[in-house]
Image (cartoon, rainbow, N blue to C red):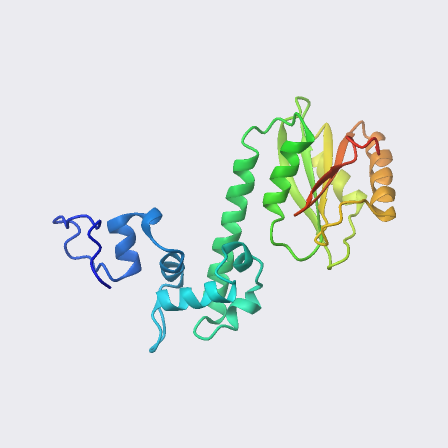
Length: 235
């Protein structure tokens, strides 16, 4: 690797670092100055006899069409099928991508007091990004509409998932929640609630009422946007 004129001058603490090694470049230049392939190379830790860790990182990016969003949609099996990656490295990459999703989701809901459906939708879109299957989750809130817990209660196939009202209400009582928001994604992109979505919402709303727990909303998200049952008058 040719020396970059913008690279910092070595100090006694960094003189021994190898500027061709991605981990050493991280220490010399900082994360923001490394390429995606170099950052992936650090996660991979080592390469193969004929491919460096950074070159394997480029192979990973190529499988994801040189797009980190596309890379995040690949399963562990897809990642592990790349020559030189294997299961252990694939799990490490998938875990790092999941942490990135969670960080983005948390940042999108920096104020944990719910004031409108849009804030919840942004959080959910970040949290459910890249998921090929439908996932059903619940947000639990206290008297001040402050989030006290978020939990995925079921994960289904490509076309649907099933949520058990008993599990949801038991968790609400355990968390001492005063109100709840139901949430799920539609991987297809279609935001219209199905008949099953409407029936489940009504069932949970009526069951929650018996325990003086209020169902504030049911929000469906996709890459196309979101739909709020409360905003649409469907509750």
